[in-house]
Length: 211
Image: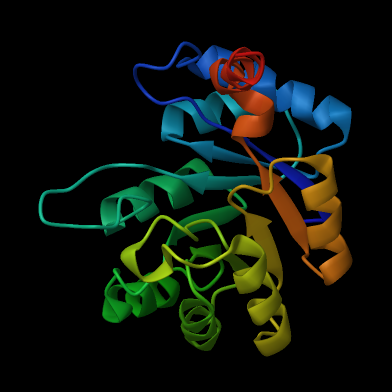
């Protein structure tokens, strides 16, 4: 995967653009704009996107399980499905909410597969590097109890100082200026989602902005 902008093309059930066809066209538009990769959720979306683009895909499967906090590629069922569909990178929750033995087992089972750790604190990123993850992303900063008071740039800087693994800036890097700052700091890539691919949120900013 090259350095640059990765576009997250996701729409969950209940959202206006929840459609594999629409997500595939979102991905194509991102590739035409110069994105170096796509982040996508679910096997059906990934299969549709693979038919439209030839840039790397970071695959996830979001699924809630009773009595489990992690919901991003949280079990072997999701990991196996993503490996089988052929994504270049499998991303999963690698915060302290996820069991370390599970993370070890995932990497050991698929030694040829590249994995991305979605983390929320610098300490979680350090653990992910020790476990052998190929990429570390700031995806969950602010979304876990342990990171509610932490700034995404603060975590990014800490990871860049303490880890040698490529760091992906993800999570509220929602303007070109923020993306540029992240890259200037040393991020390997910046993952941008809602600011590009969720028009209802973009529209709401304008609506709220004139009130």
